[in-house]
Image (cartoon, rainbow, N blue to C red; front, side, top):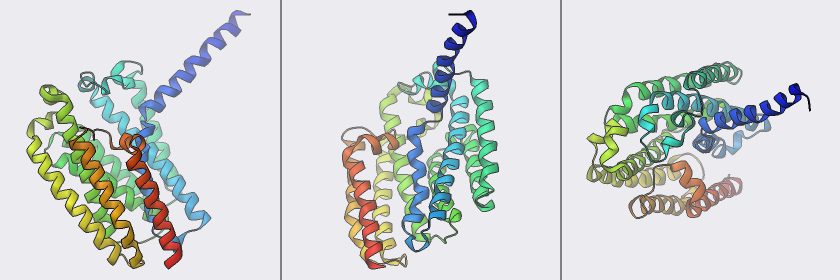
Length: 303
């Protein structure tokens, strides 16, 4: 084997390894959050078409790229703090597997590409992506240290995802739908903060300063308030969304999903990664799948 061939064979795994590290850095598992973009299409079957489906898929991918660039920026800012976290210390930049400067430049390129491509779908969709990125930059630089505001920024990201889904297919979104999205995302964000406070214990403030301003009693009370509001709001949505009243049959599934998540947070002390719970907890996963199927059957049958 020649020296040149040996060098080429040696370079291939390095390139593959770089690709895999970048995929890890973009947190592909957390892209499940962006599936919310498809929710509007699910509840708007009268607007369903192959073109709208394709556009929604493209919008989903672009939102994943933008959120990935946000994760890069967030990890870049939090490198030192992540190094003392029991699980986040294994992230590519925190562990030293990826060069921080190179990764940041990759994130800038990915963001630029995504924004340019989004213009072909809708300039309003592009504005949503820009707003999403800006509020997350502010979150990474300062707002993550402001108590209450930090979880509201996380929730705002989900509302923007839902809004993006409507703009891509040019469908008006009801206030009830956006309110349900806001409350559910607040519920998940509070659970995330509670789990961080629990697992980090006395080291919590050295990882995330805002945790020093929270305590278990406050977070538990907030979870009760938001969980109750989520169930009530969703129930109102099924009756007032302008769709068939038979959507009310999905209310028990939503109640079970909320209760199951509360069980995971308070009994099994989980909740730090809602995306991981969706994929790993069979009860939550099967409930989500069943919910989507039931909604499809109801809308196809009664509309």
